[in-house]
Length: 225
Image (cartoon, rainbow, N blue to C red; front, top):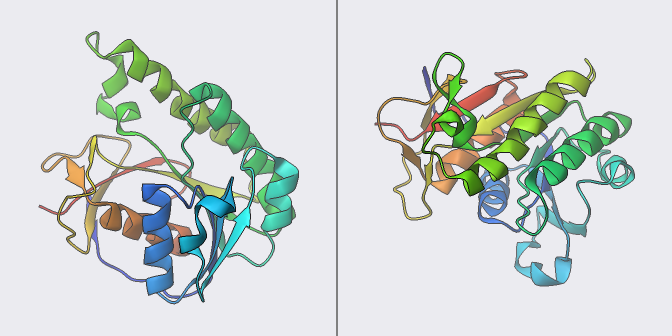
């Protein structure tokens, strides 16, 4: 387990799903560090408040490899914080992963951070949260989208794209206190406080997007004790 408070200050981020809670937190964290951001949403008319001196608001589809490739040039890294509840989870996340793997390298982006879900983390070797017999089936179906996303990235992303899945704890609470840091561990549920504020999650995402400390794994993050 590691604890992190580092603040990187170079580059420009391409953020898919910038209109959601996590996406907005990533945009805020990045701009606070002096980074430029391209905020990608499906309908810019709904998110005009995102536009700013350091933020370019654009329409884009994370599941379209040509759209990804067109948006990629000029960015240091990309973040996928999209969530779709109106389509099957596996379909959305595999389509997005496939498009990012195909499109980002064409546009010169070699770092990708995707946001995962805590239910895919292990509680014991080979045993995930979602594997528990009492785990609700409807949540298992959504979680499986992130499992499929991770497997596709592992299988199809070549050496030209360095990727990471950052995974918040079960309690991703907009009202949680902001600590200015976070704890992390690879692949497993963290002991201690099982919550994190959106701002602290965003700090971890931006740290990894521009600092590339971890590679091709699930990185669990949680608030500092």
